[in-house]
Length: 537
Image (cartoon, rainbow, N blue to C red; front, side, top):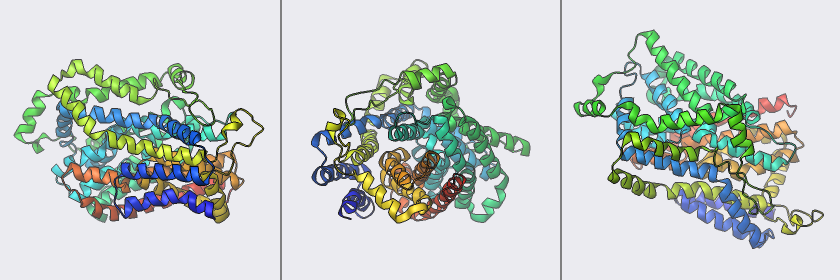
């Protein structure tokens, strides 16, 4: 029981710091890393070398996400300082003014999914647009935070699902590895009901039941389109990471077609001011969108050809060895991961956008102001998860396989053992709520996977569940972590700050918890149904 208390203590402290003391995520994460390191060293017989190696390994494993955050923030700063972002905002304001339900779906789901998939931040970009279009403060903050929730697994060009596959394969070991499409085929089952429900929730947030009734058809179309695209993309390894991009595009096209069939205007420039019209005339839309267009074209070119995908993802892994405590090389896939190509897209756009020296300097300045804290906040939870996983590890076992790999059960093993005893088969009911909790404290689905995935898989194995059930239960955890976007303090604060309404996020948070709870219940139900198919219930 003492070991259980010690294993839970770092997480409890992180929770208290976030909720009670209201400390920022990066500060909370740093304290959590220090405490988990001390507990591992003092109580779980973890050597200083293992702690240092685990910290370094966690940092490397986080690169697929942290460098995505860093480069996407650089891209957003570049587009802001060159005026491209202003032009895009002007364009979005003209969309679907005659049909509010379609307008919400187009902006918060279509553009929201597309933007978050290529590394943009809807919670920072969309609130000012929605406020300028006449939406209330609460709606302007909440809609961008919930719009992409169902497809959070495919945000940042699939970074969370790539982390998921790497963590699962590292845990399962050689001979039992899963592919991106195998993981995607499990995540697919969570999407149809969740995406439809999220669309209805968004309309209810804006106009209660009256808005829901008026938007039934667009909501169902959106859910069906997302489901159809996800069913197709998740059957092929090279298309999995493009799921978010293709879903965003498909929803936009479906809503445009729906407006056309109803005889509604798709664009209405009468809503723009004289200054906005003048700006739009002098700044072509293609030019403003160029960094995103280049990125999408490059990502498609690298992933659609099977041979190109296989080489960059499976062969040229650019693994780093000699770092992790267990000696396993850590794949970086630096030439496949999207962060490289986000940076390249910026460089390729420069000759066409022709930024001034002053604009480039301002870009770097504002990026340096914005990037360090969210990048560190993302990385530090990977470090915490790695130390918890490797606590008690016996370095001598690397040289002598006959020695036990762990001197004492790791912190994750302790949590898994007690969870198996406490919840037994009912663990499938609560795993998505564990993911929701992880996403709330860490702020991202990827960090939730890094901290809790091995614990979840260990618990499932302790319960005697098979490989398919282990993957299902871990996907339920990850999906719950993605649903936490709507209650993430960091995301809601960003949304409120973007419209100069700091403090309004507290009111939004209370309502958001209800929606997050409902969505997580649906996720839990999905887990139970899938597990029943494999004979667990």
